[in-house]
Image (cartoon, rainbow, N blue to C red; front, side, top):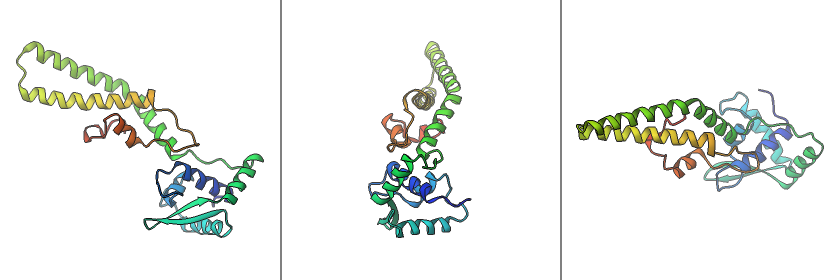
Length: 197
C-alpha cells in the first residue's frame, strides 16, 4: 500500500465527512479508510494514522471524540488547501465512494436477478390459481404459499427499486442508507434479507 498524499488524505476525510451518517460530526477512521479504498486490515494503517496526526499538527485536520471514538474533520485551512488544488487541477482523484459502490452493486445484482425473480413470482401465482381452481387446497398449503409469495414479491420489489428508482448517488452529499431504503419500502424483515444481496 502506497502512502497517500496529503491532498488525497484531505480529500478522503472531506468526502467521508460529507457522506457520514453520524450526528457526531467528522468522520471515523473506518469511514476515511473506506474513502481511500482501503480495508480495515490494510498493512501500514498505523503509519497512515501517523500521517493523519501530522495533518492535525499542521492545522488542516482536527480530531474530536464522540462516544469514545476519534473522529476527524477538515479545518477551514484544509478546505482552502483543497480548493486551491481543485482550482489548479491538482486535486488527486479518489477511488469510488463507498455509497456509490453500494448503489452500483445493488443495481448490478438486481439487473442479474430481476428476470429470475419475475419468473418465480409467475410460477407461484400459477400454483395459487391451480389451488383456487381445485377448491381442495388445505390451509397449510395456502399459508406456505402466502409466505413464499410475500418473500418473492418483496425481492422483486427490491430489484425493481434498485434498477429503476434508486438514483445514482454523487459525491456532494450522503446518500440514504440501503437499510433506510428497504424500511421505506417495508422490506426490512428477515423475509427479504437475501433480496439482491
